Length: 258
Length: 320
Image 1 (cartoon, one colour):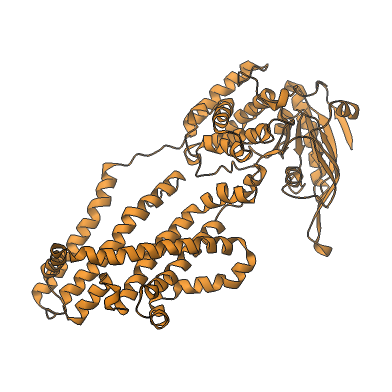
Image 2 (tube, helix red, strand yellow):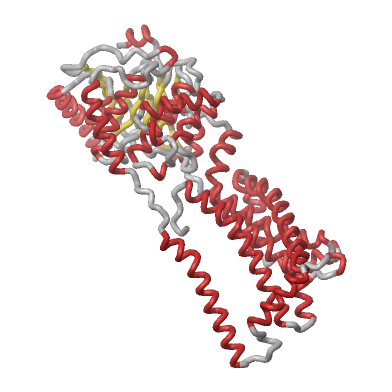
């Protein structure tokens, strides 16, 4: 796999990344030597129980925080981030929200309008562009957030580099049916755009369904415990994989009981 | 670290990224597996239809309630006043008849004097208010965003807000004499703190996720202020402006009432003062009513619709 990665390059590579919060005796190590490489266009799920520093990893890659030591090498443009909440600007319509990163990147108005329409169509929200966030359902809001993240990922760097989408449990606040629909929507959008995705979740089923690769992190401090290739698993294979990863996750969690 | 390939997993790498990360020309999904996606799309469309919050229309009953109830309340108040007057509990110079006050208002309207009073007072209040906004807005931004500034003068600004601005009138008169400068000083000291505090409150109440989103979307400091902080703080800022207007108007009346001089012209405050000097209660009440009408009128004509538009756009139309 390392050979393949070198052949096709990496979208992002983490090398011995450590993150400590606080100082002195009260310092807490959140991440302890994370090594991770994501290929361009690859879909990687980071899996772990709470306190494993999944969100910290995303914040570090997104540049919202800096590692205490170690290196993060990004070959993509500025990564786009999607949070657990849609975090849309409540005073802007759906279309304006999607347009915001394009505006910040200095894209001209006609191009902005066209791109916004394309992206809203891509998440199947073409006809609610002029609604405000409070007029949309939770699932629709999260799709607007997805379109906005795509606008930021695909156009924020003016298409010069490959893109990277960071997702921090984006569907965990949604009901089961909506989550199911959005998962398949995300896969469709991923296939249509070819962006690399780092998807953080605590849901094994979700990780196996979405990811090509599942990376399990331990908790307190966060380390990479194990990873699995899960691409294209269906039916009994998929269930077996979920089972297997679940067992391992439980082992990791139980080790904290002592 | 272990790594295993589970049975059934294919080794192929992810989909080829399209050039420049662009979408395929057609926009939507030519990818394989179209059938389950169509089904998912149908479910998704159904969910969208079911989950979208309903948008309620304003009913005629609401409109009736909004317009008719204050009118009825006012009619009752006038009826009680008329009754008390007819019973002659108090002498005429303490409680005139409603009709006497009405005649007094008609008199100044007929003679055209009322336009002078209104012009003198309202243009002062508006200028004072606009200068206050110009001073308070940068001040509020500094207070909200620079920690040292907030620690140093934050308590002072909050304290000033609760100091009745009429307390500044003697000082202003001693500093500037009975001039416009003295009046504007009082108005500014009344309005600036509440506008600045409103903006600070507005900025403090921004959910922290929004500036973070701005940052990951590529907003620098300036862009973040323009596209995120200021619009997000707008409801609090507007509330501050509304209160700032009320404070300007109040402070102005206090100043006009106390600092009277021929050079200042006759505003509503001086009119009220003249009524007191003449012991003419119907003139005093007419003055109070005019002051009230201007204050309420500007709030209803300017601030209420602004506030309503801003809150409604954000789905915060609870009380309105």
